[in-house]
Image (cartoon, rainbow over all chains, first blue to last red; front, side):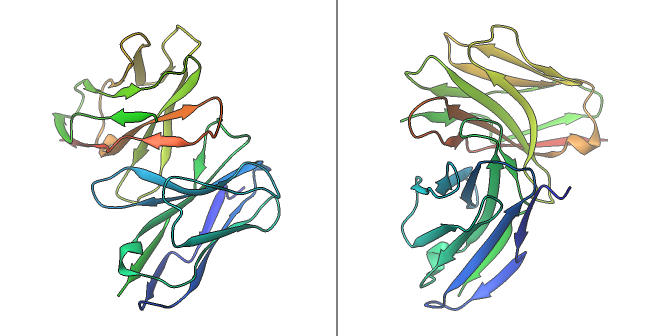
Length: 112
Length: 115
């Protein structure tokens, strides 16, 4: 039982490049989330998926897109990376929205 | 919109001491959830404790307990018999039980346990 897994662990991009961050959970949770964490700040919600087939914007959605591929997987895409998107990205899941969220190990992204 | 405030950016105590981390929040809702998460140097976010607002009894989890004051909108975390492994960033978080639920985090408190 791995919980929430994220790939990659670390990535360096050049401005304008695109990439997809992958997230998967094996807890049969309905809801999944993407957060970013910047230095000196708590986590901020980018997008979430309350259930398979639905996605909604969070606090800081600009520059990102998401796909809820199936119940297990929720990906985050940066279409044209910018230095302001340098951050640590966390994926989380919960049984339902509002319930306790369990986090993946994070992906550190550096955009040059 | 809900906000969460942690007024102590850093704290430091000796091993085996008791330490209390403060958290206040702002909401107009009556039913919600509150959490404390721990983030050690590994960056993994680990759930420490959870409190449901409709429950008057304070949550406890081994050496960790909370003082939940609903009227004052205060949710402090007490760590008893602190251990070196408790060294981490601690985040207080609020989760609504209605509408577009999302977890709102405070800025965090960096706790150092000294030997």
